[in-house]
Picture (spheres, rainbow, N blue to C red):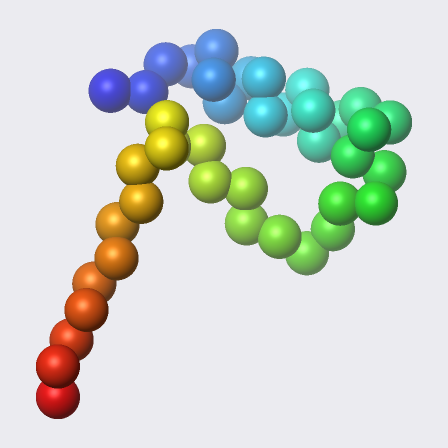
Length: 41
């Protein structure tokens, strides 16, 4: 289960000067979990 401080760290990063060239992305704050749906049609 995620914790609010993890989202807060991401928000602080995006508001910082280090993220000056970050734009148009999806920043997944999910603890390293990735869900992928594979569909064989």
